[in-house]
Length: 234
Image (cartoon, rainbow, N blue to C red):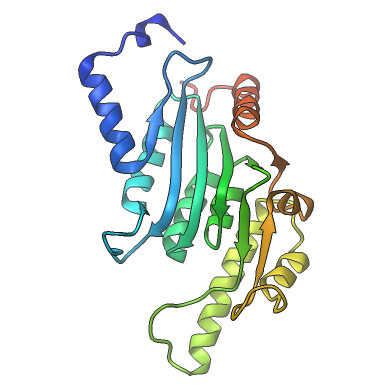
């Protein structure tokens, strides 16, 4: 990294601390490459504000951050660290689509959990990692609100499910038939449908690219940066 970035002013340090506290984002300094770290933790908060005691990742913070990262030529790569129980389907899928459409080199790392809508978020990066102790839960789309018992409601849920399945299979190695089988598994979760995948199993079925930790994710990101050209040449 250039020497001009090594000496951060007190104002810069305060700005970075505020960024990390408000939205779980950090920008590395004095490193081999300039990496932006984006954490997706707790519940992904979408169109409705969740209770104060809930740990949330707000999509109105994440979306403009992704736009800024993609435009900023000084940021060479994006590391996405996930430990999420899921959350708002449309908000999570919107974030995942933005990440998948970035020219900036991206790597995701699942630690703890990458459940529900966390699955599309994990596979949206160009390369995905999961630590051995982490788990990922895949299950059909659910609604916490009132659902009308009419055919149109079930058709709507089917279309949402198809969008999610298509995104996951387009951005990972898992086959659509295998993913749907895991989604509709009735023999594993108590009072629910779906499957819990530990780290090694998530790699075996093709949902996640590799088993590994932070150093592995950073090494893959560095390799991407060094082999890729300029994102938006003049």
